[in-house]
Amino acid sequence: MTRSPVTVTVTGAAGQIGYALLFRIASGQLIGPDTPINLRLLEIPQAVKAAEGTAMELTDCAFPLLRSIEVTDDTHRAFEGTNIALLVGARPRTQGMERGDLLEANGGIFKPQGEAINANAADDVRVLVVGNPANTNALIAQAHAPDVPAERFTAMTRLDHNRALAQLAIKLGVGIDEIQRLAIWGNHSATQYPDLFHAEVGGKIAAEQVEREWLSEEFIPTVAKRGAAIIEARGASSAASAANAAIDHVHTWVNGTAEGDWTSAGVVSDGSYGVPEGLISSFPVRARDGRYEIVQGLEIDEFSRPRIDASVQELVDERETVRRLGLV
Ligand code: NAD
Ligand code: LMR
Image 1 (cartoon, rainbow, N blue to C red):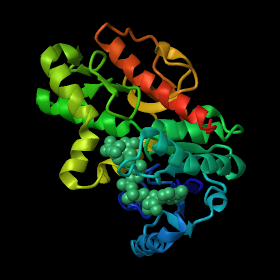
Image 2 (cartoon, helix red, strand yellow):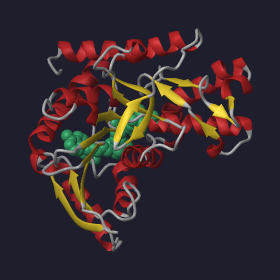
Image 3 (cartoon, protein in one colour):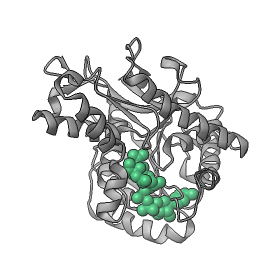
Image 4 (cartoon, rainbow, N blue to C red):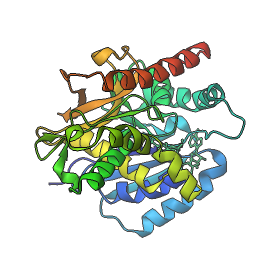
């Protein structure tokens, strides 16, 4: 059965994640094989021509599900009737830039985009922020979209989740599909905490199947610093794996998590696990009926508690910085 078309807006469409993402969206991997797609590509004026080149290539793929493509540098037009917004374009950190400068520069992007989503998007809009610093950029956009339920703004930590799954699978010599209930807590940054104390492999807790030293000295830093390691190796930040994680995040959001399992996403905190209300922090989440919900009732032991708290504190500090800048 063919469903109603969905309008998907991708910002930063001419960038490297955009190039890895758009073809997968247009081929039906974002939502499913029965849902036609209308694509809106938002770019800054200097990059519109490059985005038009990508649009030509998308046309040339003759994807059966791709109904239309529009390239624009008009933020309001880009989000008109949008059901799914993938906010990828962001201001990268350049040499000599402090974190506060980075947050301020990104405020100039995510504030108007939040306002444009508020004014123009479809009632069921769902937003995924990929552009870094993803959690706080999502917070800025959400703060400027008062008519959109806050829970519809999310930040991407699915790449961290996938990285953690892969490292654990390699260590234990198991398939990815044998791992359940892994979770990333906190910020999409080097302070994030990948949690193996609730993860299960073969029905047993993963943290009990690895040496504690490997967990703290190898696993956690490898996952948390993987983005920097990719930049070091490739000379550019992760693109295909980031696009893949964005596809996973939205696909799960729309289609749900498997029974008994969960995943990770940056979602608005309701105060669970001591994470201050309103922060966009990564949690273990389940997707049901088209909504992400924080998994409740997990016991947090003394190994995990300070690590979660440290990453959450970084998010609190980022929120304080953007508050001082008048961005939230
Ligand atoms: P890129 O520099 O190749 O592309 C970014 C694109 O965004 C550029 O084409 C630029 O013109 C565009 N852009 C800038 N400002 C814009 C605006 N206001 N509106 C629309 N477009 C705008 O970068 P990339 O490699 O595609 O990465 C994009 C972002 O994703 C970066 O911030 C990167 O750090 C982040 N990222 C996040 C994760 C994650 O897991 N959350 C992983 C990888 C990368
Ligand atoms: C990643 O995790 O690969 C990126 O967030 C790294 C970056 O700084 O763009």
